Length: 137
Image (cartoon, rainbow, N blue to C red):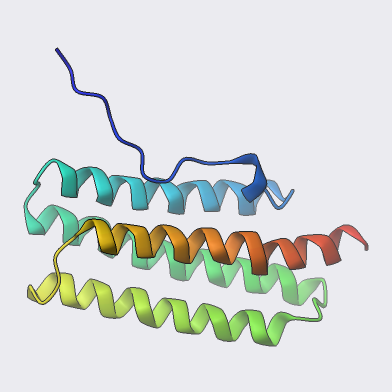
C-alpha cells in the first residue's frame, strides 16, 4: 500500500499574478520547495537535499532576474524596493544552501515552513502589488 504524499505548499489561485511566465516560475519554485520537503520526509541523504537546495537557489536567482527585467520594462514604481527584497531573499537562500552543504543545517519542518512563508508572503504581498499596477497599464 502506497503512502500518501504530503504536499507542504500547494498552488493556490490567489498566488496568480496574471502573467503566465511569472505564474509558471512561481509554480516551479513551489515545486522545488515541495521536493525538498518530500526528500526530508523520506529521509533522503543530505546530498539529495543539497542538490534540491542548489536548484532552488539557482532558480530563485533566475526568476528574480526575469521578474526585475519585466518590471523595469514596464517602469514599475516599486522596482527599487522589490529588487532590494529579492537581494535579501537570494542572500538568505544562499546562506541556507551553504549551511545545508556544510552540515550546519539540516532540512527540518521549520526550514520548510520558513521557505513556504517566505515565498507565499512575497507572492501575496509584493508580487500582487506589481500585478495590480501592471494591470492598470
